[in-house]
Length: 299
Length: 264
Ligand SMILES: Nc1ncnc2c1ncn2[C@@H]1O[C@H](COP(=O)(O)OP(=O)(O)OP(=O)(O)O)[C@@H](O)[C@H]1O
Ligand SMILES: [Mg+2]
Image 1: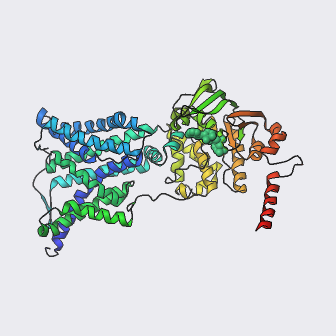
Image 2: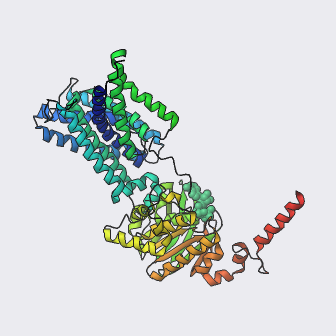
């Protein structure tokens, strides 16, 4: 193990926080869907990948400028979220939740296939309108892409949190999450909120896809981002908005520290499993996560 | 005025639960629907609110009308928009939402923010206890407070008909009294019809104007609340009084206890 080095550690933590914010954003999409509809979205990574493909493809194949391609990806993913709920999930309403989960696994495979068919198997690039030159802040070296990604994540996390916790729409969403029957009795059209949750999952996927795609390049591998979501939401709590944020930050920092200190010894790969070690530990101590609701037993 | 004309309800396409039920709930009045467990009271309310469909039930005959406009076959969230709101039995608060958020959820169909605010103010006037607890999670309220909350929440939609399912269930007598005082006050607004389902017939007949008795999916008795309270069958079966006017169930219970003591 490399010796402990404060500056090195600070750098790892800072980069981890920046990346962690982006994990948090994607995890939020997952959490909103889980809260509102009880569905576990196993296609979250593929959503991200597909959004990146739309953005990269629109720029590469149709020669669209970045902003137009990005807007297209956003609109496309919102439409996709709505459509998925409407066409695939709605007929499954009232069926066991496992049917919905299987449907998300199915759509994941489908998205991977369709992406390759439509955009080819090669890796595409998204040319983000950001400098490549890293920013130096004292001892820290900050890639502008990460800063932009973190900033976008922060803005949207704040917006979604406000929407969810303070707006009337958010109250209705949480009411639906607690009891569809009682929410319906308040005049809430439950299906509309299901569709809305999936559309929000589309929004975060588009944002994530554009930023991650810009950093890592766009191919099927991008869907592996989805695997980060599980440790994040188990740590934070499957149904907690705050948990998604905290969990994202923790996973970002932990995997970066692990990679920085252990990769040189084991030759790499710690980034991928360190969050899962944490996840399993959390499952043993507090299966509902740091902020997840242990159901209120009273009533 | 809410009218049920001879409705029939079937669950799962085969189980016939309501067999021709006709009920009228007049505006400005409290109408009560009495009956034993499994008589079909809750099913009647769900038929009105449209929530039956989510439970694989449907109205197969007859009609349900609010002031002459048919409601059956509307989706439940639209029924609320037409002015009918159901309060479930068992105090179904949104446990993780605060008291005030529960009220906001209840006002979902109000498009103007002002009406939401006015509604909240009115609810706190009706139930001052709720105001003190406004920012608490409703899951931690006492049973009585939760019952107040679900009634207040239902009123947030400014309904023309409120359907109350056993609001006295599982509450201490003093709390029940408090809640029934409020239910009686609901009449004062003059533009609300209350349809009250109860097992506690004595309480219900005390505040109601009109009543129905249901058995096995049929209405077996109907009349003004006073006439029902005087009816000897009702006195015996629902009010627990025998001919001498003694509390039958109470005495039975006492005898049972005495016997038990001998045995043990
Ligand atoms: N979803 C359902 N599917 C099939 N049968 C049902 C369903 N819901 C209710 N029933 C049946 O319908 C009958 C009437 O039930 P309902 O709940 O309306 O009675 P109730 O008068 O409200 O009784 P209680 O006083 O116990 O609440 C019962 O025999 C019940 O088993
Ligand atoms: Mg009932």
